[in-house]
Amino acid sequence: MPQGKVNAVGGPDARGGDRTELQKWTSPCDAREALALWAEAFGEAEAALEAPQLDGSEAGENLDLLFALREDGVLVGTLHATISRENPALCGLSGMCVAPKYRGRGLAGRLLGDMLKELSARGVRTAFLGTDNPVAAQLYRRFGFSFLPGSNVMARYMGDDAADGEFRRFGWAEGPFRLEEGSPKARIPLIPLALHRGSQLLLDANAGLLSCAEVTQRSCMGLYPKYAAIRQAGGAFFCAWDAAGTLGAVASALPMGEDVRADFFCCDAFYPTVSGLLSMCEARFGAVSLWIARDDAGKRNCVEQLGYHPAGERLLPVGRLCVPCVSYERPQRR
Image (cartoon, rainbow, N blue to C red):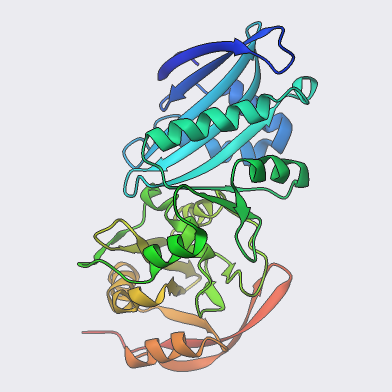
């Protein structure tokens, strides 16, 4: 990993014997060794999700840090952090991995502790990570992380409790709103929005997102790739931000044969942006239809006020569930 190196710090391992070296890198960096370790631990597909964040492709939108532990020149552990440039108080953690033969020596705790000190020094206030591993969760709890309700996502609020963090982020919006096409800028701010327990059941028909108040949300750093996949399939997504760097609403549009399906979700304070976001979908694709869960009365009322009319009923498969939906359309604007 010859590029982007910040520094290297030696130190004793938990046995008090051999010395390990902690290397700190910023993107872009050559992360082939780390990616190989992650592929072995997590699988090729999950490891591949990390590559765009470390090769510099997203350097304009996010700051990525890679911590690597070496012993006798061998890579034995890693931890990856992504800090949002739009909202530098938010960070996502991934790639926590210690090679099997080096486990049980406190190396994961050293990686996490050093990373949290680095993040605090950089002004990060909230860090997110996802895990379904009970042993890993015990480690994260020791460092102040706790599970967000209805999810496998853990959060650490540095100086704020969870309730205060949610209220500051979604209790109101600091205008003016800014609407723009989605990009990797949304990678980290999307996490708290998707985990926000609002009034909507079906968040996004195109991304297959349901409220964590209804089903367990198992994704954290895997949320943004759902929107990258929409773009790769010929669709697009659009974001609404406030002046504080809060992502409060997302709309997506996905071609489906001769039709284009659109959907949106938002926190309550961002409902005024829905009209503009859907207009951006129409400007890109022409007429769109909306699939809205039959039980999402507030969302249905919103689109009806915007001139959309019920056009039929649909069943939307989301994982093992089928969500009863009402499709909405409106006449093409001239």
